[in-house]
Length: 100
Picture (cartoon, rainbow, N blue to C red):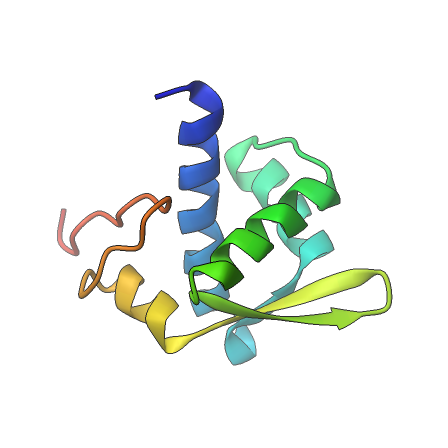
């Protein structure tokens, strides 16, 4: 597995976790870009974050709304199921079991 694949799968999990933590379970692509850079040292442009949003949408883990020049992601029930370990979605790092 390439380092780029590892970074993408980790970032997708981070996106889902942050969506779960946000009021309304939603966040803009620009806010997520800044969060990935500041907290995880994943330095990618907003277009890269939006590409990951589209992947997560295609896997039905999030919904996307376009608002002017940014995208707003919202966590879906399927995304929540991945986070709590009920299901595993391909291409997204599995969360660490709670208590570990």
